[in-house]
Length: 433
Ligand SMILES: Cc1ncc(COP(=O)(O)O)c(C=O)c1O
Image 1 (cartoon, rainbow, N blue to C red):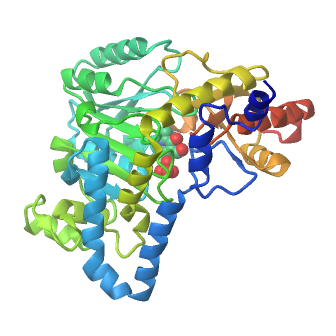
Image 2: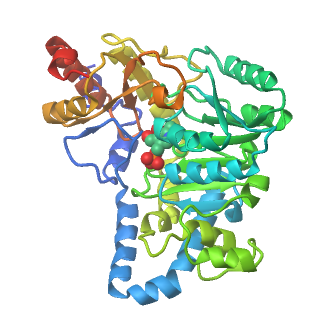
């Protein structure tokens, strides 16, 4: 009885103690830190860090040889490994620094397919603010952004019905639907495959922001069938910072053009874009889109080592543990702050949100860090709504808790204690919004 209690307090239930302790010792998380923010970035597993450092040493010692002779083959292996992991053909995958880059590319390609009769983009109303800015850049040239309310939907079926109604209302004018596979900060998982099928039935493209999906959900991009799916590998998947991808197919792939134009672009006009290009280790199109001049691409090169770590980690075990921890967070933090969902909600996996007082977000982060080395963030439900014309209602604030497999119940308890202390101080007065 006493042992069970002790293990619980230290965050290790008997069932997962060996597994989590073993793997926690293989990640490079600083001691004493409660990192409840895999939703921004994760610590890097030591074998991945070592592989990246070995490549970086090579690059530093023999830059010319590394860049001109070795890099292409390493990137090719990385695309193949990622394609195998995500159910995608390597030639449809573009390795990029992050999902922001990926979605910007997809938006640019969609814009090229726009016609006067098909110019409406239907976006979920809980999209990430920076990427709404990317969409709204194109409003001046006639692309129209309309929002579909999904945050008030109680189930995946309701989300589908909301999009279906919006598409029908558009009467053939919808160029694309756009949504996050895992919405933030709520952590809702949207029914990606069903939404893609729905969009296609209405003759619209489907563009998905999968920022949080790799490492949080089982992912089969081939089955989801989106025209464009952007993802981050440096969040839940634990790749080094600077690793993301775009998976793009069909007409949208044909319309793809580089955001940063460099040497690859010259091949695009003179050769078949799908022909092999040995210098960049992919097709001409991949070379044109991925190569932004000389940059450090090592975070993308170590995908085989990231995936090997996941093979050892065991994906099913990770998902079960993430769900268990987020349910624990809903129960414990939910005793003091209103949770967005109940623990058994079908929409929720590993990220959870709790209603919070409006406050200065930077000051909140610093307070948590200085108080007890806790990494957690607050965010608004909908960002920058005024500028994108979504609505002008004041938006509620949320505490976002990302519960990754390497977290413990002790991390969540520390956050709960810190919140109790902070709430006694009244955050609105400590750091006003
Ligand atoms: C839903 C969503 N999309 C996009 C992004 C942008 O990610 P990045 O800055 O790594 O490109 C984030 C970051 O948290 C996000 O939560």
